[in-house]
Length: 254
Image (cartoon, rainbow, N blue to C red; front, side, top):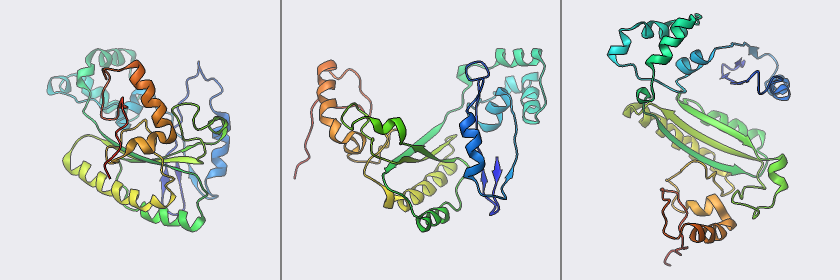
């Protein structure tokens, strides 16, 4: 976690499996100190898995009253306080939790690809537009350089080969009407503010049903070939979602 001089707090979540990745991501951790300006305060914490789940809400659990009266609820409080539970308490927690206790989640994502450099003045403007950002908003930047650009745009379904990075803004939280309303209102405002860097492409992994012609943004020149493939392998359109590929290209009426 980095607390910058201007009062902005940046959280860097780094998850490491000591068996599968014993050396961790050394290059990333080394580069962190060069990303943030001098004078930033740095602090580290090493939560266990249960602390991570409980305090971040990454996999929230709804605790019914019959569970809340058991020692399981006391264990939840213990985890939040950073206290180490005993093996018996952990086993009790695992026995009490089940998939049907998972809390409902509201998720919305919008993304665009950027294929040019952003100037300092433009970056400062984006910083101003981020004021008042709700806690359940995530702004995610994913680099598209390196191996991504070694393949041609028509080589497979992923057409986004000449972009510098993907910029997405996401809202995720429990579906409380007021919280969702405020989150989406801020999200729309920020989305309008970043349109000047939009290259006309969207990451297809997250459904953005606000886009009328999402196939154009998701697949560009690859759309026709993908439709042919869909028609060949699924002519009856057995697999259907709101973003499923059609088996015919329907041209809009002029």
